[in-house]
Image (cartoon, rainbow, N blue to C red; front, side, top):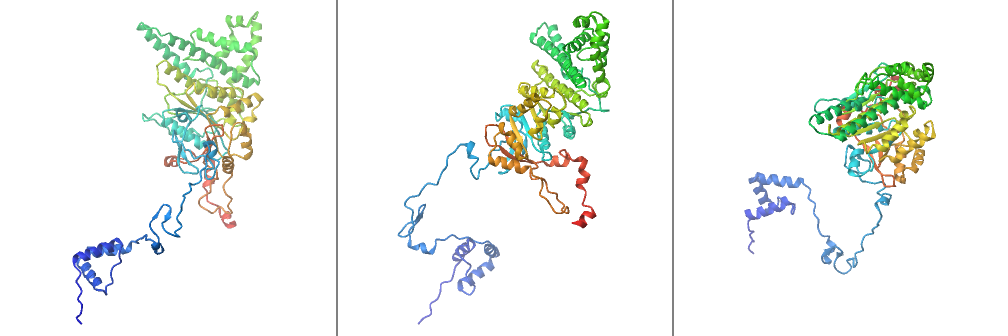
Length: 591
């Protein structure tokens, strides 16, 4: 029997085999077989093909093949295999569906809280659950229609980052061209961030320091509003020189002059009431108002060149025919007896428990061209309540007058429209500083939309508002939360949430999160770890843009690299050396 000869493998067959091997469709042939020997010689002659084979061996090939047992069945589709005993579904049931409103849908697992994360305004951080970026500030959200009033009320226990959240909005306001104003920084927490704000033209933020040995503040100074009057008068004279008439501008000048005069009288009376401890008599306000008008009419003083308290005291002491006629006194003796108590009270403002802060001209005036303004009153000691109350009253009057001056000039076409962000941090101290502060803030919360001003009010808990001296002030202050466009809650105890139920509605999931954020850092047995644990709720806040039970937005505040490098959010500077110190040898030995 003749031996059968095999046909040699050609290059075409080797190319086809190589393509299947490199694609993973076939394993390399054994070397002991004729095909394997031919394939090895062919790979040796072509080194690049051998490299392709080695690479293909290193990459695991995943092959999806039809199970062997399915050979008895037909093709497969969305309902399974075709054929007898294949388990094919005759009817494909629709998946279960639940329909609900967005208001109540947030309470169903896994959507325990709302996941909406607006990207409008200042970048604040990330969503606490989804990690989505969250942005927001009162003016931007008001512009977008998310809130109906450009204001926010912030509640959080100390040390959880509420001032950091406000400073981020402070920085964002400057970036958007708005002017943040801190009219009375009690703890000096906004000095560094204000000083760090610089415009492209090189204009720095303005920091005004007040207190014993840190400048003076004239309560009779007209401020920026008084300085706007000469500008308006000069423009009116230019119009008259060209033969034009502007009745609206003339009326605006008269209205501004009366507004400045009213502020001067109100400021002096408020300071006098702080010193006296009770309200002034009606005729005493008449004496102050009539004296200021007479002093301006004499030409010695004006709105741009205001008098001092000493000048007012001397004028009242000397008297005038107009004052005697207004007080309806018979002679000089009766006049002196009538104004004696008022003069004594005003003398106490120039030197006494108030010091000499109000005895001289204003050291530093508010600059409306500054990108940010901070009036630092941290130099006033905590026990000096009378001076602190007087300075805060004067600061708010001056700051509010500056904002009004910018709007008046814009309405007259003499300046561009500017928008402000008023920041009232440590609200408990500001409202409790003295009579008149609650009314001043209440006025701002009611008119901030008209005045083009955003408002941020910050305190620890709602209980702070209940400690005001009289019931009227308490009810007025609680209205701040009700009128706020949005409420921002950090870590709070459960009792505080119960107190806010009449104003805000929290879901069970939101209440659990806010209460959990009020806890401190986990307890450690030793202090030897290099990285210190932070409180669980540090930087965690719930944004509530409405008060009708709509879900809130839980966020985790994130700091940028620049914020960390400049350390502008560090409010523990006094304890920094203690906090950064390594454990002592005695502590290490005990551990």
